[in-house]
Image (cartoon, rainbow, N blue to C red; front, side):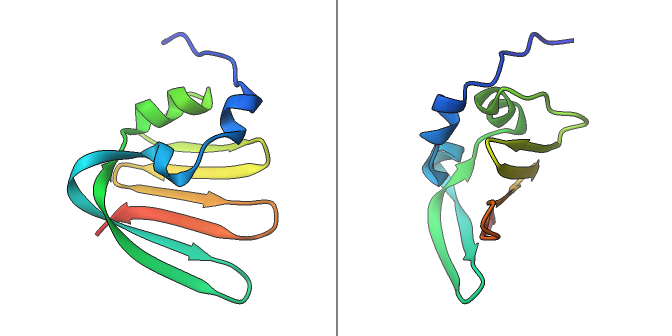
Length: 97
């Protein structure tokens, strides 16, 4: 079993969607949904691996997936797709285009 670092809330608060993206080849679709609005865009780059994001969040990936709540944000991730759901109901999805 790998050694898991304890969550650091001050570190998680500073995370932005760019924190989960690696520059380079590939295209990602970013979808942000709120109660009244839906924004969608495509950007260059690729998602960091499930293990890298699990380490950033201070959680353990199980069977190549993350399903956890960190600092009020619900994270669901599998290879090539990351979903975040915020306390106010807004959702953000980053996935391969």
